[in-house]
Image 1: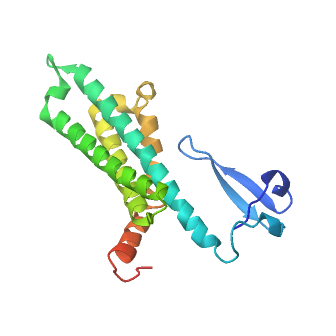
Image 2 (image 1 turned 180 degrees about the horizontal axis):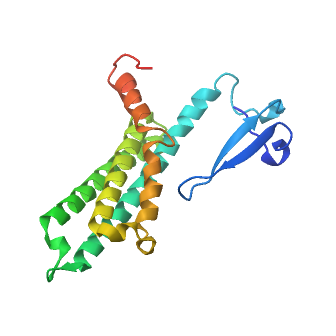
Image 3 (image 1 turned 90 degrees about the vertical axis):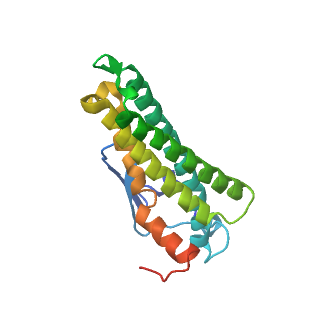
Length: 202
């Protein structure tokens, strides 16, 4: 694993190209060709870089899980507020079980994901192995946030697509976490192989 000073590397073997995306998330492509890096910039032992990266990804997955939990809470709160205020036939739409049950279920899913996220963070802070918990926390939180996004949009009806409510923006943003920084399918493969002991699938 090597530490690279971008100020020195850009134009000297490293090119960065921004990628426009559907949401407010800075994404770039990196092109590396004949980039010279001093041996003093090596982190840790030679040959162990990939293991270091995997360990770092546990922290990233826990962090993303926490972000998804925040998104999920935002969607639940937004849906709850709207369902309590929006009047149809002289009663709030949130009085209807068809509206309130999906919101309640989303709240439960977000809170359950939070507990796994806390366990992953606890294990990471204690220096314990946490790959299983970090992966599961990321999957649970991303799923909970995405479902909460769908519920929030559905609760708002047509207004969910209006920019003034911010639902459509957050809807697009939280969709990212089904595929990045690790896709749901990769997490399922990890759990199947490394936790359950099933044969490697790829």
